[in-house]
Every structure is written in structure tokens, then in C-alpha cells.
Length: 122
Image 1 (cartoon, rainbow, N blue to C red):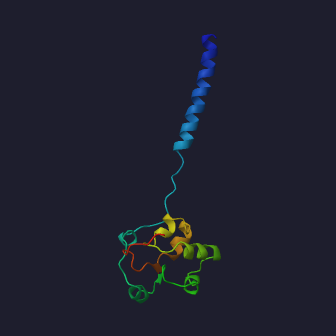
Image 2 (tube, rainbow, N blue to C red; image 1 turned 60 degrees about the vertical axis):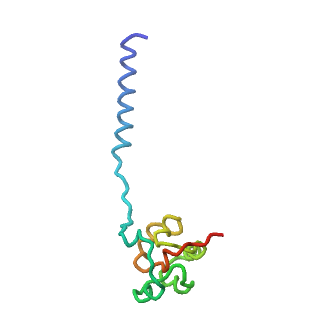
């Protein structure tokens, strides 16, 4: 090949590569909708009475009727009950029990009693 043909092939290939790089790096990064606090990250040592006094629903002890008051759809409610026990309410998202949007809607209404108590695994 002559130099002029190589020149004609090189520049379009370089331009295409630059375009792909710019497109991939120029994408805005998705921010998480979950705003964590130290209270969310800590395994709480609250009793069920503490949760009730704070008007929170205990994820490990509440029955189906109490959990329905949170406004969950039937599939989410079933997953929430099946995946008990929880040590922290953040496990709802980390264990993919609920989506981030559903968690954001109920996170101020729920809590976990005895979160520091070891979980018995079968």
C-alpha cells in the first residue's frame, strides 16, 4: 500500500476510536437514590417495644397484615416474608428483596429489632 492509502485509512479509524471513547466517558453516572445514615449502617439493638414506640414496623416480627399497611405489592410482600430474618433494613436492598425505589418509599416506616442478635442459619 502506498502512503496516501494508509493516510486515508488511518484518520477515519482514529476519528472513530476517538468518537467511541468520548461517547463512553461522557455518559452521566447514575447516582444512587438511597441516602444512607449511620443509623442505617449500624445493626441496631432495639427491642420490639422501642420500634412500636417509634411507630415503626418490625421486619422480622410483623405479620402479613402489618406489612401490607406499608403499601407493598403482593410479590414484594411475599419476598420480604420469605427472606427473614434481617439484621438491618438495608438488607432489603443488598439481598435484592426490594428494589431501591420501593425501599426508599418504606425505609422510614420499618426497622429491625434485635439486629445485633446472631442469625441462625439452617
